[in-house]
Length: 344
Image (cartoon, rainbow, N blue to C red):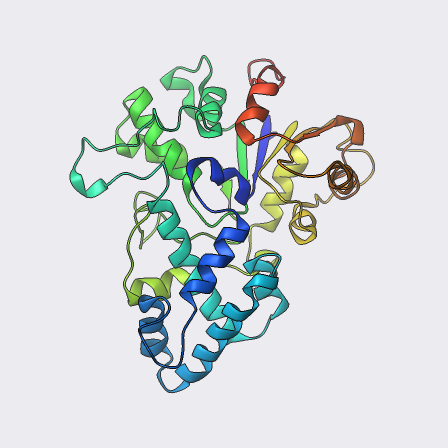
């Protein structure tokens, strides 16, 4: 089905609710993998426990891999890029994924979207705290003049390609439906689970209300057994583009079918752009509109990104609106153009 809007979400987007950008994430990963020998006095103790428990006789090699990652972090483009460059090195991949999960879960817990679910039914997101973020603007866009009975149809107009490991969008929409429409948790879950939300590189696990056998709360804590399982949900670039075991076809179809594509906090790394390349020929996407944030990006790099989008995605460069603005500012600037009520 043709989508009115496909959102492509990068690490910069979650910054508005307090999650780390790429450089902050690699610093945190380096700290967690500062493992000297077999000492538990350094690095992340749960990661050390996982390596000690699951790798046993080989743990010395894994501790060395952890130190390798730690030492290299100041030089990397991103942790994803580093793991991909060491494809086939099982020790680096294992340690890197453990650190990603631990970092992201803690980032969720420190974000504006987190609340303590253990306190009871009265607890919820503080929606006042996120009133000025793009999440609130997204909500208004998705629900403009929409009655409860029309939510499933309305939400089917949107798709999300999320390059982050966090579950911010799913968590936000699930809780927003309950707060705004007073839906039951079950009914809210049905609507959000029906959304086309793709994570090319996986997530730190399914949320407990999603269709899964093992779920972890937003910002949840992990012990060694759960962490080992969750790390398996993280994908390298190669795994994310494996045509036999990924969502690559569905992702590219979302790009192809979109009337509007909105890039939020996306860094336009070549590997990620190539992943989005739709399987089309000719001028099928020449009428697609593209909106993109380029916060604190130089003019020359903005022009380069526009050229890449025009070439790889296949859109007319004159239909690309890329500007130095935050995600919330993009929604404000193009609120009329993005309104689903005006799109045919």
